[in-house]
Amino acid sequence: VQLQASGGGLVQPGGSLRLSCAASGRLLSINAMGWYRQAPGNERELVASITSGGDTNYADPVKGRFTISRDNAKNTVSVQMNNLKPDDTAVYYCYATIATLVPNVYNTHWGQGTLVTVSS
Image (cartoon, helix red, strand yellow):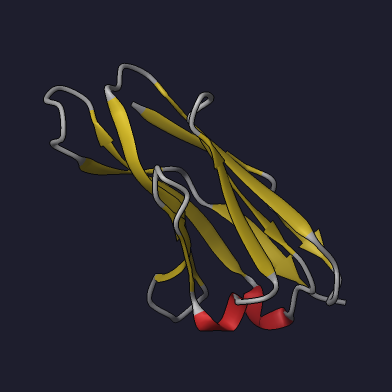
């Protein structure tokens, strides 16, 4: 199973970016999907997550600015990031909890990081 992330880049404060991540390979089902981020010198922190049923969870710093969504048919998760701030600068990692061999036995898989830089 692989997770392929895309969509990072350089944006000015107040701008928007959309990150996407697609899971591929032999998988049975996907439970939670989401995004973490890690800024230089900081620990990796949860940004947003979404369950297979569509329940969402956001970190306080991004509430009202970021929107997470997923397409269960395509095994993709995206996050729309609006009103970006310099503090949002980080490497963003997508993740998914995936059952690959045994139904309802899930392991966490990670995508490669994608850099988001918010700067004027």
